Amino acid sequence: MCAMTLRPVCEFVDRSTDALVIAVRLLGTDEEPTARFRLRLRTRWGTVVLAETATIAERVDHAGRRTCSALRFTVPAKQLPNAAMRLEVAPERHESWVPVATTPGLLACSRPEPVGERRVQVFPAAGRSATWLRISAWTRGARIGWAARNAARELAFIARSRRFTWVRPVRALTRPLVPRGQIWLVGERPETARDNGFAFFAHLRRERPEEPIYYVIAKDSPTAADVAALGHVVWHSSWRHRLLMLHASVIANAYSIKHMLPSRWRPGAYMNQCAWRVGARRVYLKHGVHLSPDAVKRGNGGYDLIATVGAQEADALARTSGYTSAQLRETGLARYDNLVPERPSRTVLFMPTWRRYLVPKLFGGDDTVLVGYQGSTYQRFVHGLLASGELARVLTRHDLTMLVVPHYNLAGLLHPDDLGSDRITILDGTTADIPHLLRSCALLLTDYSSVQFDVAYVGAPVVYAQFDREEYEAGHGGTSWFDAERDGFGPVVSTISQAVEALEGYAAGGFVREARYDSRVSRIFSYDDRQNCARIAAAVDSLW
Image 1: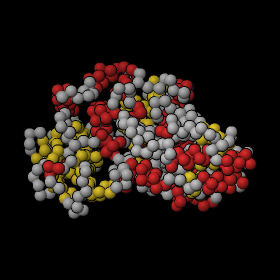
Image 2: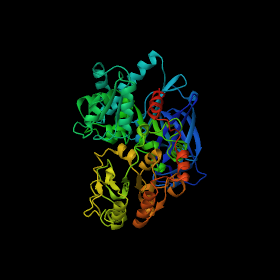
Image 3: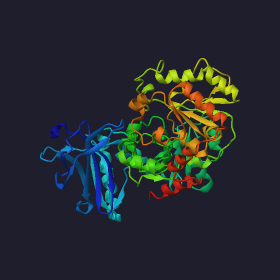
Image 4: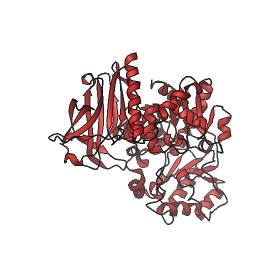
């Protein structure tokens, strides 16, 4: 590749006592497997401090496509001076060096970190995108010098009208207004408190009632009263919320840290310009077991900690995401501590997941979709099942009710005009008590939803209706470490009649899960002791 067409970006920088591992991705290219590239670190005065060489490696993108576009450079930390250095890349036999641009994940988790007895931090350039690495001693005098250089850098950002240049002075002025100690902010979506965020927060309020740990939620949320009963609630986008975001040591969310941002804080600007000025630890509590690890990229999220349920999930994420065992922790999910079975039950739960190609781009302001909902394979199956006379007869014959919970991202589209039975109820996914439904259902019917793991955890059978598998894998799911045929907790069907037949078979047998599925459950989960929240809290504590 010609050096002038290179588009390198830095996805992350890992530290050890004596070395830095710098991960670079070459955008828009698929190099020869033997291609080699050089990385050099150059001071702002033009002095080349160090150069390292690496061979191109395979990278898997969010859709499972494999390209030779990844580079890992190991840089001896002891050979680096106390200075700010720009990262630049060139093909091995070229001298046309290209600055390495930043990624949102790289900057989101940037803060002064120890490397040996010194500190290192990644910064963006004030002008054209470039990655700067600053290393310094950490004596009192060196810290004063660090602060002075930060001030000089801020002037450069102000001169170019960059966002969030006010963060550091406002932090300094408002420090007396916030509680002492490490401030933790926990949340989910702005309007919800029913998932791993709420479960984790409830545990922290019980175990650490005096610590400055807060839950962020919209004041008009239907679940706001549940949080307010625990105390330490912060209304989303209030002035208090904005203030605490500037001083938070930990930001933990079950969906995305972007849901924690006050209104008018643009996600892209926050990731690229604000997060590295604050330095909060980013914790991904997750809202379920991650079945499509290719979609998780460290260069996009920049999480310091991700909760996983066991070795299979953690290993799958480690293979393609860029995250390592330092971030991927086998803790279990917070809400599983409350998954105590409430059975026997006569309720069948139907929870299909969403399709990326059926809804507008999340957070992006793009209202286009790739496939129209009306007439889609998804719409035909879901609406056909709910209107099925065969299903209605099975529900009546076995005295069952079916509760349907549309996925949050498709809730506005799933309104079937003709339900086949008055035993079927469509719930509002934003207000339904999902944890109670998962604990109390007799059986779960789903396609790919990660709530299958909750239901399996409490011992109820699962039926997989995978009616559009090829479409789903091509347009949404990508590759997965979990295959329902091989690893799932119940039978896999593809038609409405097969789904109804499987449901009736379990109803006739008292909703007892087969032994072969019990053994699969035990292989997935590392823990079954209702101590997940305690492990997550300990893992967060260990980040310092």
